[in-house]
Structures are given as structure tokens and as C-alpha cells.
Length: 211
Image 1 (tube, rainbow, N blue to C red):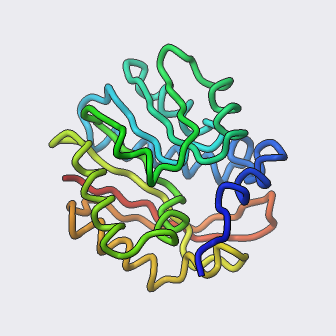
Image 2: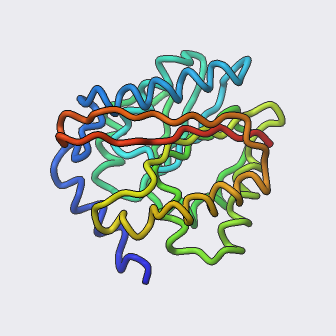
Image 3: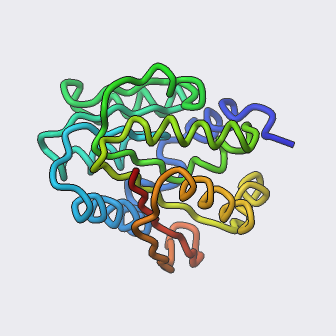
């Protein structure tokens, strides 16, 4: 069954600042750096960025630093995390909306050079039917410019609840197939590294898709 209340789940997580060590973990920061480098490699100019699930704005800030001419729209389910992101980012370049990205995407207009959708697809797909997810991805690609790129990092086959049931390899492959069915996969890389804060070694994937 889907998570009973994903908003409450994330609000409880963000009661403590930086619950996943996004701002301090070498493992997490390297994951962000790889995504930024991929965007730099796949795009000529980045003027508008859409980030789905921006959390406390750590990756958002790295994106704005890497692309100093860009503006960013971030969507975050947790009110607490969204408020932290607003305090972290320049308000003349970043708009952080506290909303459910499943519902809010229909209100987004304009063309984006880059969409960043990292480590949230499985939470969102848990609350969608297959056709709903496909149509959502269609809408998302419709917001990308013809030469734009969608970049995501995901950690499949997690062992902790509730992520364990959401990140089974067969499900992650199904999400990839939906993305590839609408757009074109242009990059896949796999990275294994130790996260010191968790005293564990994890393997994550980075993928990029173009319209």
C-alpha cells in the first residue's frame, strides 16, 4: 500500500536539520557534483532550472553557483525544508514552492533548460497509477526545451523502510522504462562509495534523458 502520509513523513524527517547530511556528507556532495557536471556536459546554456524535491536547497545552491545566469524553481513537499531552502538561496534567482509536485506541475509554465528530479521519483510513483506516471513524465518533458536535459540520481534496492518497498530493482527499471518511453536516455553511470555518516557503502545511479 502507498505511504499513508508522505508529507507527514518528510516533515518528521526535517524536524532535525539536514537529516540525510546533504550539506556535509562527502558522499552526498559528490553525487550533486556529478549531476552538475553532467548538466554542463549536455547543455550549452542554462537559464532556467526546475528541481523537483529540492529539500533544504543544498543541491539548488550548487546549481545556481554552477550556472550564475540561471534562475531556479524548486518544488518541495515539506514546508520545513522549503523554508530552509528559501533562507539558503538568493530570492532574486530562486523561487521555492512548498507543494506536492504531483499536483503542482500542472501550474508550471515556460521552458526549462534543465530538470533535476533526484531521489523522489519512487516516493511520487507510489501514489500514481502507471498511466498517471506516464502522463506526468510527458508533462515534465513538455516543460523542457528541445535541447534541454532531465538529470536524476537514484539509490535503488534500499534496505530501510519505507524506501525498501519503493526502490526494488524491478520498480526502478519500470520507472526508467517510462522515462525512456517518453524521452531518450543519453547517460547512465553507476557509482559505489562509502557514506561515512552511515558507516555503509552504497551504489547509486545517475541518468540523463533528453526530449
